[in-house]
Amino acid sequence: MIRPEKRVCMRVKKWLQCFIGGIFYLYCSSCSAPKNITYFQDMPDTAKYRMVAMAAFNTPVIQPDDILQVSIQTLDPNATALLNQQNTANWSVSATSPSGSTGAGVVAGYLVDKEGSVILPLIGKIIVKDKTTDQVRDAVRTKAAEFYKDPVVNVRFANFKITVLGEVTRPASYVMPNEKITLLDAIGAAGDLTIYGRRENILLIRDNNGKKEFIRFNLNDSKIFSSPYFYLRQGDVVYVEPNKSKVVSTDVAQVRRISIMATVLTLLIVVASRVKF
Image 1 (tube, rainbow, N blue to C red):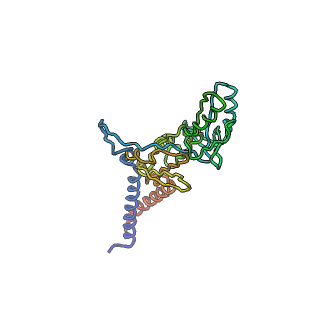
Image 2: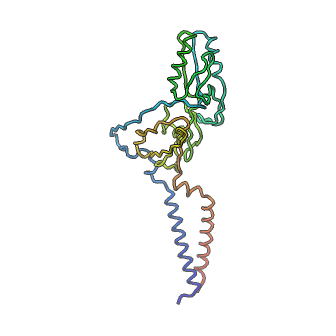
Image 3: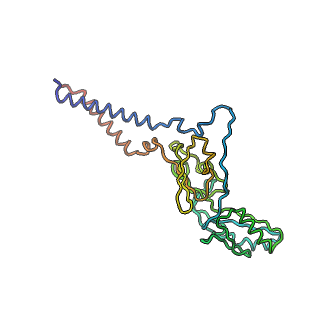
């Protein structure tokens, strides 16, 4: 018959074995396999040639609260200065530039009002809502041509902002330098995904006529190039979820407690094994 003291010792040993096995399992599960890290895994890993259909690019349209940079160049320097003086109006935008500088930046341009229009010096009021920058440029050039010969007009977004959150190197809002921005451009501006980012489950959040759209991407699959959401719009939010490895590794307090418990239990087992029953 097994004495009670020895039965307790055997139970403690069995429990410790299970405990150490669980710790080992968590350690192994926290390791990221290469198959979960590599982008576009369906592409051949040799020198074979392959083509992927690209999504059509739809030029973004202007909406209220956008900021436009409008410049008008004429043969008369004084007239040019007059036409562009209001273009230096400052609007504070908290964002990060693609070069990596962060903080609240100062953006020069014309703020589109709630009615969807801007007021330009001499030109007057121009309706810009739901128009592209090319369409606004043509409209401004037509107006300016009534006063000046052969004016040169440029119109662009001053606050084409994309937000990238989650498991990337530099999560932040980014003011992009042009309108043709892809999902990969946004991720690249944020310094790429960290080792803990879920490449197969990237979330895009987009405002669409007062509603939120949620779209999932898989960076392991080259089909993202054909997605109608591959090109981003101003105001889009890209979120990279953490994988299981991140969840395990970030719980520092729990890991510390487990280590202390394992040390104490090991000491108890050593002491118990030396006790003669």
